[in-house]
Length: 457
Ligand SMILES: Cc1ncc(COP(=O)(O)O)c(C=O)c1O
Ligand SMILES: N[C@@H](CCCC[NH3+])C(=O)O
Figure (cartoon, rainbow, N blue to C red):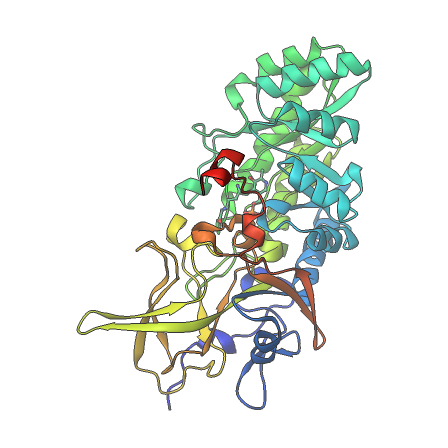
C-alpha cells in the first residue's frame, strides 16, 4: 500500500508555523478523515457549505507569539511586530493580532477602519501606500495613526495638513534600499525600479526638505524588500543599510528612533519549499541592526517588522467540493471544483503552487491518478493544480488546499458574480463564523438601473 501526501506526516514545528504545510491542529480522525482544530471537515461542510475558508486559531497565535518572543530574545532595544493586514484583513484578524500584542499595517481607509474596529490601538497602526487619497491621509492624521511617507506627494500634503492643524506630526519614510531577492518579480519591492518608496540616492535631498518643514518630524525609516523570501542575507544587508541611513539622517538633525524592516519571510507551500524559521529570521535582522549600532555608537532604535504571510498563511485552508470530471484520453483529466480564481487568484497571478489532499482519503492510498484541478470560472487559466496525485475521487468528494490563509481571501474577487466563501475559525472542536458567506443577491447590492431603463423594460 503506497502512501502519498507525505507532508501530512511531517513533524510539526510548533514554534514556527511557516515551516509547516499544514495547520498545527490538523489530524486524521479514527475514520481516516481529515480534521482541523478538533473539527471534522466533512461535518463543517455539511453545516456551512463549500467552498469554505478555515483558520486555525492555535497556528495563528503561535505565529504571532514567535515574532514577539524572538524580538524580545534577540533585540536589546524596544521592538514591535506589526501584522501586515493586506495578507488577510478582517475585524477578527485585527482583534487576534492585537490580543497578541502586535501592531498592524494598513494601506487603505478600509484596512484602517477594520483595524480600529478590531481594537488595534491607533498608536500601534501604521499607514502605508504609494497613492494615499487626501481623505485617507486626513483620516490617519486625525486618528493619530503614523503615516509612512512613500513619495513627494505624501510629503507635500502632510506638510500642508500639519500647517493647517498647526501641530507637529511624526512621520516615517519608506525608501528602496536597492536589494534584490529571489522571489516572483511581481512581489519584489526593494530594488531601485519599484513604484514604492524614495530612491536611496534621493534621501539627502529628502532629509533637507523635511528639515525645512515647520511641523514634520522624521521619527522612523521603513523598507520592505519583497515577499515569500527564503534567503536570510538580504535582510542582514537591509539591517546594515538602514543603520547607515539613520546616521545620514542624523547629519541633517533628524533624530530617527524607529526602524521598520518590513515583512517578507516565506512559508512552506510545498515539500520543496524550505523557509527559515521565524526565530532565525528575527535573529538575522536583530543581530545586523545591533552590530551596526554598536559599531557606530548609536542607541538602539525601536525595531519593527511587518510580517503578513508568515502570520496567517499556514493557519488557513480552503475546502472545495468536486463537481464535473472531463477526461481527455492521453492528455489529462480535469476535475472541477466549486471555487477557483475568485477565492484564490495566486495560481493564475503568480503560478503559485500549493499542497492538497482529499478530505476522505488524506493519505492518498493506492493512488495512481493525476488530476488537473480546475476552478469554475469562465477562464482557461483558472487552474488551481496543473497535475496533482490524488486518491481515486468522485463528484461530491471534498478537497483540502493548504496554506491559503494569506493573499487568498484578501485578494479574492467576485469574477463571474461568484460569492465569496465564508471563513470559519476553529479551536478545540468548536467552529465559529468570522466572515459570512456572500450570496448572489449580495452582489447585486450596488447595481443601479437608471429609471429610463426601468420604463423601457
Ligand atoms: C510594506 C509591506 N509590508 C509588509 C508586507 C508583508 O509581506 P509578507 O506578507 O511577505 O510578510 C508587504 C507585502 O509584501 C508590504 O508591501
Ligand atoms: N500578493 C502577493 C504578496 C505581495 C504582498 C504585498 N506587497 C502574494 O500573494 O504572494
